[in-house]
Image 1 (tube, rainbow, N blue to C red):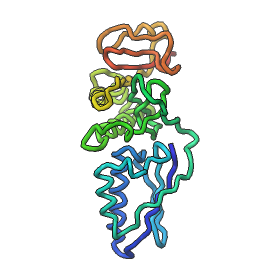
Image 2 (tube, rainbow, N blue to C red):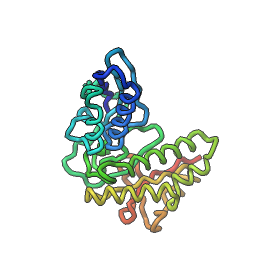
Image 3 (spheres, rainbow, N blue to C red):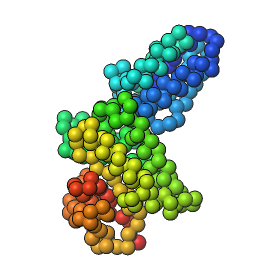
Image 4 (cartoon, helix red, strand yellow):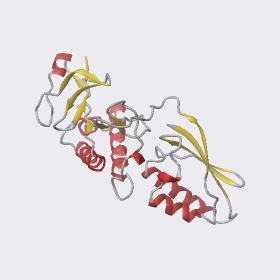
Length: 254
């Protein structure tokens, strides 16, 4: 993940509100196309320009080759009001995960947490991050369904981590196979699998367990099959059901 400064030089000295509205529209279309991450985009107004600070999956994420129809449309709208965006890559986020560089992938994973700003799509081979724009579009020339699921998942993860308001509701959404959140996530996995032709697994959260022995004897919550692995995938995921496309971890025990 990289931190990037995007500068828009003012062409028109008037129409300030229109300039800002169009810049925000562009940022939103970059986000839904997987080119920028998160939802907060600090803007600094200078005398002759606006500077926006964003985080991107990779160094070249804002290259025009990745633009979709909505990004191109909003860039055109900015013409005459602001210059084309000047992009300066400030550096790598030192706490981010590496981007996947694998030529081929055995499987993919849909996985995020309340702390993550990165793409929720992971390579099953290297566990590296896969920028969404590196797979075919999953919803109307963008990735709306994936990004909406991420927002819902992280909202629930925040609630269960805070342990105050809505904790039980959030845990049920994260861990139950028949919860609306899980159903939405599995639908997203199906859409990814459909466009990539690569098996895509959904990470099913498990908060706490009675004991380690009880945990490793857990059956797949969807098909009741044996899904425990003696050799955890990426030293983290202890369960994997190839039939149902589910992965999980051994829960913490008292």
